[in-house]
Image (tube, rainbow, N blue to C red; front, top):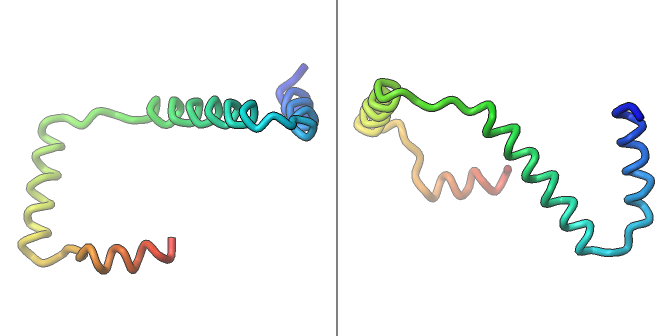
Length: 79
């Protein structure tokens, strides 16, 4: 079977699944696969990049370029 045929077969089978624990296991498998794909694209930071990032953060804080926790909570209500 090709990829699309496999997907169609899985979708049709899912419609008849009554076992919630089986559905949860499938969700877990999909979540783990997504996490693996995401992690595969991550690139470790060099020591210089980490130091530069910290220095920039410190400069932003000193310059007042920051968000209070209250403002962040208000903003997150619209996510």
